[in-house]
Image (cartoon, rainbow, N blue to C red; front, side, top):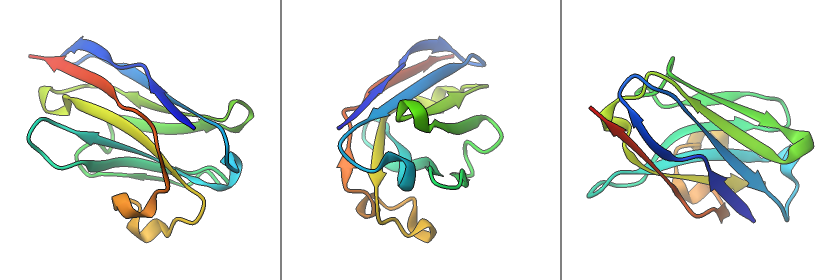
Length: 124
């Protein structure tokens, strides 16, 4: 129901755009989140968007560098990642919830649907 794509290898300072295409739930009234998991680390919330009103949320480590957006006509959420750093290297996952409490958008337990990840590697 969720398909993430757009990962790859990029040099530090470069950019990538991830896409998350969804089906099977009410996309335009949901929370779509991006999470990432680096080797040996826990999965962490990166960003989230409320697709009904466009409100966005960011982790402090990516604020000002990453931008989340939604194209409801295409059931797709994007994560534009600029000024990438080696520490951004991780598998990136998108997740969806039709019942999210945005106060807890960074919690994995707020999300009902998960896509398979896409690998982002940033070289120094």
